[in-house]
Length: 376
Ligand code: SF4
Ligand code: SF4
Image 1 (cartoon, rainbow, N blue to C red):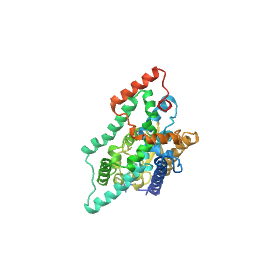
Image 2: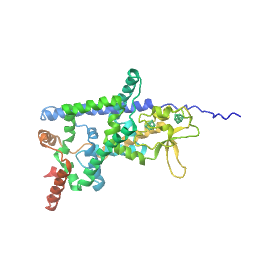
Image 3: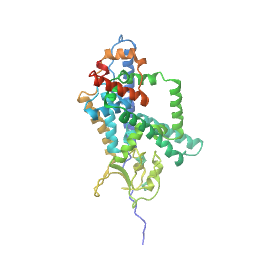
């Protein structure tokens, strides 16, 4: 009797081409935002003598701390803070995308993730060609390094949620430092310091040898989305009955997850990139599943991941636009004022500075003077 398993070939079209298109489109959008922001800064630099160029609100997507604080403020008071409302909606969109489709923001939308992937691919080809090997980080080093991003996230969460009172959060959001944070961020990259350039160059070189070095070990955003990944109902599942143990899925995984050794991928590093699903040669063996109780789980077609990730992001940001919470409420006159005094605005750092901010805001509130820094 022939006991050999009948193998049905996986004929589903790969999704990677479309993922590349989505990543490219979002990266181009970010570049465009950068160009627009440059024209806005030129207006500030000219002290308002050249034609005014509207500030692109999308730039606030690069202010994760301010956006997280605005989101926190929104949860506490229901109020959308006027300084960087687009940042808050982008932050919420990223959280929602990750809650539904795991850490998919990193592999579908994030321009840094896209760049890291391109560098990682080129690095792998280079190492294979020149040194004839693929570098794998040993476990004893990989785990402690991966925890660094959680420590960074823990520091930010502790500083905002535990060290700052609600009034202090508002004081920070109202502060001239926060109001001009987007312009400061622009100059961080436009006039990059020697130290920052060295750090970025080191990260770039490390990414050639270790795939996605920044994303895997240091990005606090990635840490936050990694946590949401565990809560997300959508997970990669392997059918051990039809699996032929070819190991192609594990080989294709950019996060080095041993997909071929588990039934369900439960890793904070899985970015729902669908590389493993594309690589599997057997039909209905490796797929994304929405896990529901009482055996009601169902398979999610690859194309729904693409459509879902983009749609959630677009819908949430559109809500921001259509409810009038996209363009901030800072006038060009205020921006000109902030620009002139920008050098004197500093970030409150460390428990002492937070304590001082808490005390100052509490004192003002008690005296009935609290109107927010902007309205003083
Ligand atoms: S397990 Fe699959 S979906 Fe997750 S990161 Fe690896 S290849 Fe991508
Ligand atoms: S690619 Fe992975 S899941 Fe698919 S048959 Fe090979 S080992 Fe099994």
